[in-house]
Amino acid sequence: MKCRRCENKASVHMRQHKLALCKEHYLEWIPEQTERFIKKYEMFTRHERILVAVSGGKDSLSLWDILVRLGYQVDGLYLGLGIDGGIGYSDESRRLTEKFANANNLKLHIVDIEKEYGQPIPVLSQISHRGYGKPCAVCGLAKRHEMNRIARDLGYDVLATGHNLDDEAAVLFGNTLSWSGDYLLRQGPVLAGAQGLARKVKPLCRFYEREMTAYAIARDIEYIYEECPFADGSQSIFYKESLNLLETARPGVKLTFYLNFLEAKKSGNLFVDRNAGQALLHSCPKCGQPTSAPDLCSFCRMIGKASTARTPDLQL
Ligand code: AMP
Ligand code: FES
Ligand code: ZN
Ligand code: ZN
Image (cartoon, rainbow, N blue to C red):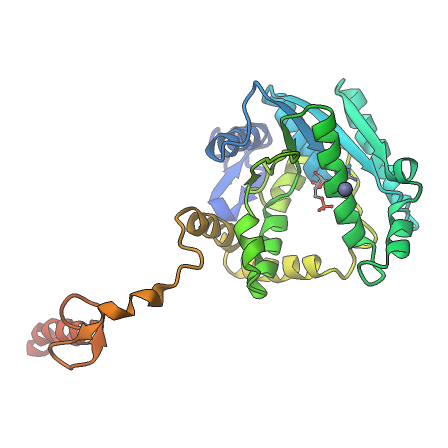
């Protein structure tokens, strides 16, 4: 298959967008799209100072790379969580983040949780007895707290994270399965700032995970392949796998799920009680059953149409 923008052979095929691009044009397309999302959701401007939270994974390193390429004022923040998991997870992710920052001459802030608070995340988790033995709850809490603290203390206007569409769709799926209204109303590409809370943005929220992998590889970004060792068997991985099954059968379903949710939220249609208008029902003039249609009920209209449509066929 050929690239949509030139005569060269396509190297990235995106069934979900019915789009194929060569490497060169793919590396143009990703920043163009990111810029579009930044503007569409009014995330930030070129006059604002951005702090991007970088974990050493493909998404956040790519996000940093894209924002720099687009000419934004953006520095990095790495949080040392003190997670080993037999693979030196935190040490390796820090090494790769520092390597990227040095190679591109970028400013990186490093905060080590153990140095700052006396214990690494797994120990803090044990001591606090939160999260049923897994440190993920304490880790999430510490990450949110520290990201906000640094953004605020160092005077950044906005905090950006590398969450991609797969992350967002999985969170949405989980919140929908449990109908967690408060979480659903808060989920989105931008969380407005408030007193003491930095504005939070997710510029990659419309990119599939595999689109970000392809970007990181095409840009020769060295990132940590391993997931956090504690993520194994997590609910979020289960939701991602379930959504991937749906996506294989219906390419694009993940994006539609997320975008239609954002639309419904924007138009105020989420959780509107449509039955509130029941008083407007009247009797259908033909069958007498209650209906909200202005004249005949939908069933009688359907039967009416079917009988007129069938007549010429039967005469043939
Ligand atoms: P996760 O919660 O691990 O899926 O990561 C989501 C986003 O949080 C990443 O894309 C990063 O922007 C940010 N993040 C995760 N871990 C770290 C970390 N150790 N230091 C800085 N940012 C992080
Ligand atoms: Fe925090 Fe896994 S427990 S990244
Ligand atoms: Zn091309
Ligand atoms: Zn506090």
